[in-house]
Image (tube, rainbow, N blue to C red; front, top):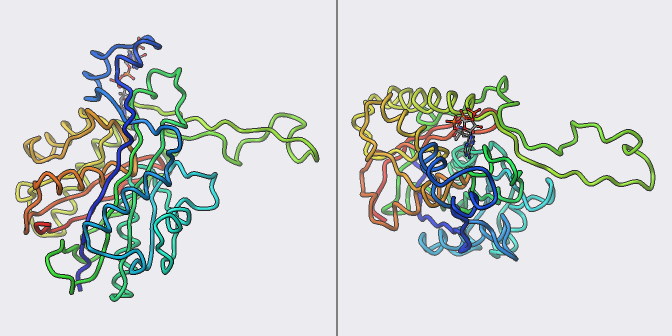
Length: 339
Ligand code: UT7
C-alpha cells in the first residue's frame, strides 16, 4: 500500500527584512550576502505570530487543499527547532487545538533542517498502520527569534515560515504515491553536533551560585551559532550522496528525476549539488532569494509553491532531500500527481 500526499499548504509572514535593512545596521552589504548565499530578503514573524500560528495557517491550507476535515486527522507531526515553548508543551499540541483536530495525537520532532523528511517518514508509518486515518505533517520555524542579530555571518541566513502536507492512504484518488521504506534515507552524524548549535539548553551549568539555589532564577538566552564552512562541505557531500543512493535504490538515474526539492540553505550549496549530480539547476526548486533558510519549513514551503504554480504533474519523479544541525540528513522519493 502506498501513502499519498493529499494536499499542501504554506505560510510566510507578511513582514520582510531585506539585505539592505541588515546592511544598515551591520558591516555587510546586499552584494556580499546575495553573492555568497543567493538570499535577498527573508520573512520575519510579526507581533502575535509564532511557530504555532504559522504552522496552523499552513496546516489549515493543506487540509483545505486535501478536502480533509480537522476531525479526520489522526496524527500531527510538527518538525521544528523553534518551538513556542522550550520544549514543552509541544507546539504540535498547540496547533492541534488551534485547528480543531480533536481526534489527533500530536508531537514535535526535532531533526533541524532535515526535520520535515523525518516527520514525513513518521507519519507515513502511522498512515500505513492505520489506513483509515490521515496525518498532518508540518515544518514550521521562527528562527529570527533565536539569532544573534549582531553576528553578520549567521543572522543573514535565516527566515520564518511554515509548510504542511496531509497524508492519506492508497485509496484516495489522484494523490502522490510515496513508495516503500526502501525509498527513504534517514541519517545522522553526531560527530558534527557542534557545527550548528542553539545554546541555552540544560547541558550548560548556570553561573556560580545560580543553579539549584532556592529563590534564584537565571533566564537563559538561547542563540544560534554555526561553523558555516563545515556545514557547507557536509551539505554538498551529503545531499549529493543521499540523492544518488535513492536513485540507486529505485533502479533509476539522477537524470530521470524531474524535480529536486532540496533544503534551501544556500544557493551555492544547491549549485554544487546540481554539478555533482550532473543535473541542470532548473530541476531544483529555488526560493531562498525571498525566503532565506527556513530550516524544517523549507521543503514543504517549496512543495506547496510548486503545487500552486502548477509545476508538479502526475507521474513526475521527485526527490526531497535535507540536512541540518545534529548533523542530520534525510531524503525521500515520491511520484507526484496533478493536484
Ligand atoms: O541549514 C543549515 C544551516 N546553514 C548553514 O550552516 C549555511 C552553510 N554555510 C554557508 O552558507 C556559508 O559558509 C556562509 C554563507 C555562512 C559563509 O560564506 P563563506 O563563503 O563560507 O564565507 P566565510 O565564512 O569564508 O567568510 C569569508 C569572509 C570572512 O572575512 P575574512 O575572515 O576573510 O576577512 C568573513 O568575516 O567574509 C566575511 N563575512 C562577511 N562579510 C560581509 C562573513 N559574513 C559576512 C557578511 N558580510 N554577512
